[in-house]
Amino acid sequence: MRISRPGARAGRLATPALLLVPALLFAVACTAEQAPPPAAQAPPPTVELLAARAGCTPKIQIDAKELRQGYCTTSIGTFFITTFATQKGKDDWMDQAPEYSPHLVGNLWTALAPRPVLDKLRQEIGGDLHLMDHRKSPTPAG
Image 1 (cartoon, rainbow, N blue to C red):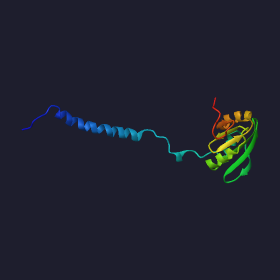
Image 2 (cartoon, one colour):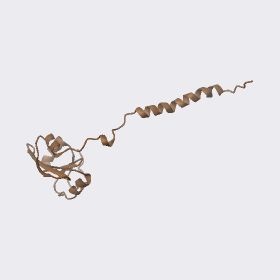
Image 3 (cartoon, rainbow, N blue to C red):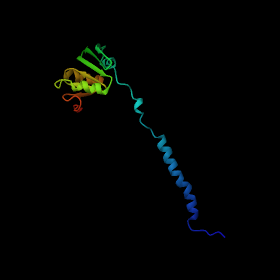
Image 4 (tube, helix red, strand yellow):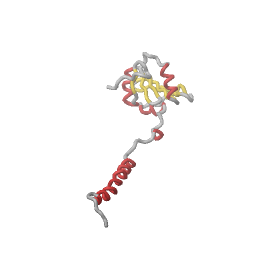
């Protein structure tokens, strides 16, 4: 003789449904759009690429393994662009940068020029404007 408990049938039906919820959550999590891995990021720009964005071909002054530097003169003025092989190289160079001279700072690059030139150059090549402590306190955008 079979004894039927109240709710026993409902429990048997609910079990497959409860198993479905984690499976659906797993499927949604696996198909969600994810940020590209760091390796997929673009390499840092070269002196030539940054200068081209500003509309010039640079005159290369330093072409070394650890850094490259060139300068351009355009309608906005003369500026120097330096690119670095490593973040440590950039940090070491910026530690020696003159405090009175503003810089634009980007990913493994800097640009040096008088402030009016940098304000215009920033519109062409981007970067953060650093007026004093070149490593730690960029000027707020605005």
